[in-house]
Amino acid sequence: MAKNYRKINPEMISLARESRGISQPELAKKMEVNQGWISRVEGGLRSIQPEQLEKLADVLSYPIEFFKQKETIYGLGINTYFHRKKQSISNRSLKRIHACIAIRTMHITKLLKGVDIEETTKFFPFNVDDFDGDAGEVARLARLNWNMKHGPVHNVVAVIENAGGIVIPFDFGTNEIDAIYHRTPETPPLFFINCYSPSDRLRFTLCHELGHAIMHCDTFDPVMIEQQAHGFAAEFLMPKSDIYDYLKDITLEKLMILKQYWKVSMAALLKRAGDIGAITPARSQQLWKQMSKAGFRKSEPVELNLPYETPSTLKQITDFYFEELDYNLPEFSKLIALKPEEAKPVYIGTGAYIDRENKAAIKEVERMLKNLEDF
Image (tube, rainbow, N blue to C red; front, side):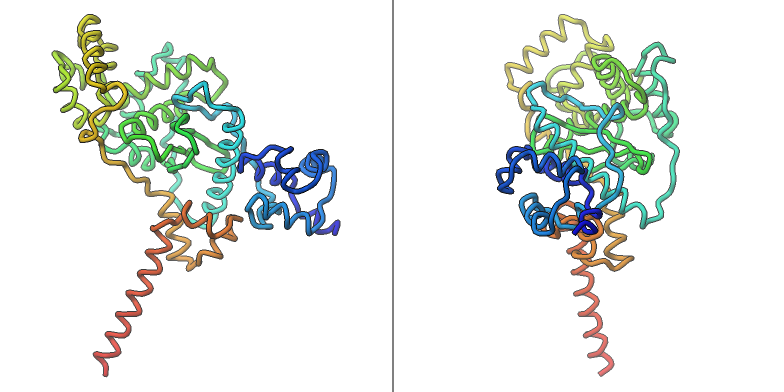
């Protein structure tokens, strides 16, 4: 029994519990033990019997293999930033999200070991202080380094992934967080995005997080770094030199048209117009009042909704396992220490795994037709 216990990583017990949003007292109640026992097991001070481990795995809905993992758990530290995080979000929710992202990061780390991806060095860091805190100047340099054309950014996801990042649609379980940027020594920059946010908001969110990834590598004043990331995103998506003339003499009708061209919200365009002096403060105030009266500050017209940009890098990685390495769902799930019923919607859904099954069926039909021809 002691030998079996030594294979268990106590940190994985804490991680699993927090990822399910369960406190120690709640887990103790479900396990029918006292909290002191849970605390000692999580702290590595007490062994856990096989039958107790099975019950723990059942309660937390993870396979036994999950608790045997020895991989490094990378927490969300100074290189992680939240975009438009509401103050109302609870510490408990944050702990759950942090744990879920740590687990997803472990998955991606494992999956990357089996594929050869092009190493890129396109996330060149810039110390914004070297530019007197001008985040807009950093955004202009980033666009220049990535050989981006003048005008709108047609696909933000593609820009980030072409630079070597990985964009990951993520169910935060709340609309109080739009995105999290995370990077570890073993992974490229990871951008977890709320899959339920509107597309125009997601584009700005991604550029906001991109600003953090490029500019902020040390501890900074939290208010200042958010302002700088916002300034970076605004200049990256709407360069002043390119958009200034578009924003002169704007009206609500013109904002609707410009939203489709620049692929940002009407509100972002109006704020940009005021920030760069394309309109007077009086005109800006007038237009904001019109936006409020029309209800556009709460919800812009649905017919103006922008199409979602689909990430591809992570899907290509999972496709490689199913199509090239010929993994099936149980094998893939065991690799990442997740139950198949949870792994499928997270990593496969109606994509790679089903595509693989369809391709197999098509090949079988082709074989049968070939046999008929030969006959």
